[in-house]
Amino acid sequence: MEIALVGIGKIAVDQHVPAIAASDEWSLAATVSRQGAVEGVTGYTNFDQMLAERPDIRVVSLCVPPGPRFDYAVAALRAGRHVMLEKPPGATLAECYQLEALARENRVALFATWHSREAAGVAQAKEWLIGKRLRRLSVTWREDVHRWHPGQAWIWEPAGMGVFDPGINALSIVTEILPDPIHLTSADLDIPSNCQTPIGARLNFYHPHGAEVTADFDWRQTGDQIWTIDVETDQGTLSLLNGGATVVIDGQQIDMAGTNTLSGEYPRLYRRMAELVRQGGVDVDLSPMIHVTDALALGRRTVVDPFFD
Image 1: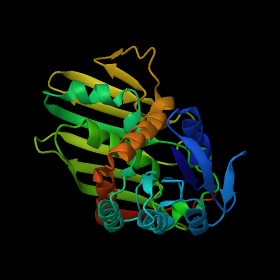
Image 2: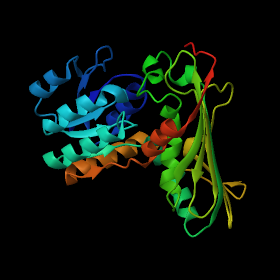
Image 3: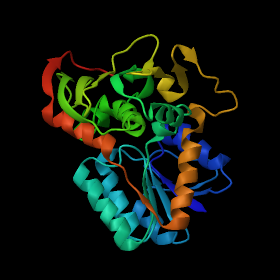
Image 4: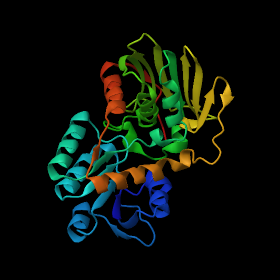
């Protein structure tokens, strides 16, 4: 199937382009970007022009920032194209609900992707938690924004989400592996004095059986990067390390030999998108984004030192 990739930035170059190139189900037929390009692929700078000139391209993958993404998605869905959304699926929940309704109205596939759910250890962690009583779950997601998001000023503006841009990855895993739903009760947000979005966040959640569930997100990490979820139950402990690529159960690391760890995330997303296109299905789970929206609504804000890229 031919696909157009819209927004040729870091995530597109690092993940989407290699995943499409390695797939036997997809062919990258066009790109749309004001600055980026993929060698050997027809490039457009105007999305509407691509839609008009390439009716043969039935699938669009959107990697533009969440702020402008809604307009691109609406145009594609109304043109009868299947749409794949990079995370987060939109700037607001209302936008996402509208996109889902449009997809169903136009009988096309819509996929709100959460790449961290495809990390190798996530499915194993979900299965291990079945039938166990949760006592504690803590998330520590600390990374250096200079290393992973250089020059991306949009993340500090409204709709950019700040530290929740990576933090939502952790929340996508938590909402996938926990048998019971949780919801936010409080949050503390660190907002740089020259930014609109947080650089750090501490979250507390309600769990229906009284377990302690917390998350600590920070973009000011130096040295080793930390992407860890620690779980304590009545029948032992589990840790997901390295963003879900490594599983440790009761202190023993599980052998993941022969399994793609983080490198398999985007190939698995594109396989799922191929299934949805064939079925005409809609896969839009907004639970990670709900937690972020609640944190931005309930969060107690503290102004901290300005951020300079």
